[in-house]
Image 1: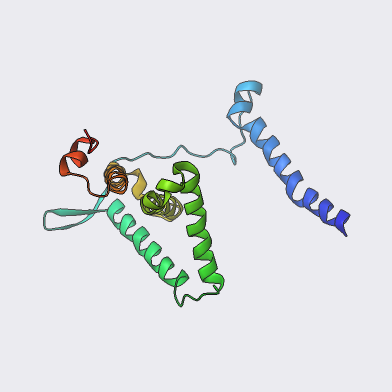
Image 2: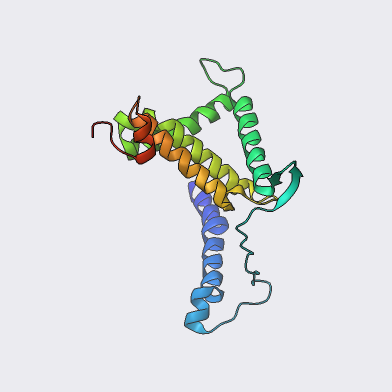
Length: 188
């Protein structure tokens, strides 16, 4: 039985992956430069239209509601609803939903501990996890037919400001306003 299971994995996973790799190599950018081949029309994909400014969808007074603002709020709504569903009726012995939520949090905490160390991990965890979950949710929700907020310069600037302030606040529990504005250490 073990031999047939390995054969099935070989036949249904590795061989198709090798075939896809070969086709991608021959007809992809490397193959085009090495072999001078041009991909067939069904392999050709149109170049994406990169659009930096957010498009206004409607106006409320002088305030423009843009597609990235709507997509950002949709992402926040999805994250809040998902967290409420996953953590509803929490028990000492977790069910499937609670175990999934705990696995996500534990994985993120282990990642932060591996980068920042155990001493600073708990302080930095909330900011890093918030940004990670927001950005990855935006990336997946961008597959739906509305603009991803991560393409907006305003969203990126706000995430940068949030991360800078959160890191500063978690590093120094009671920083002075000058430390926040000018990134000075409190002891200087």
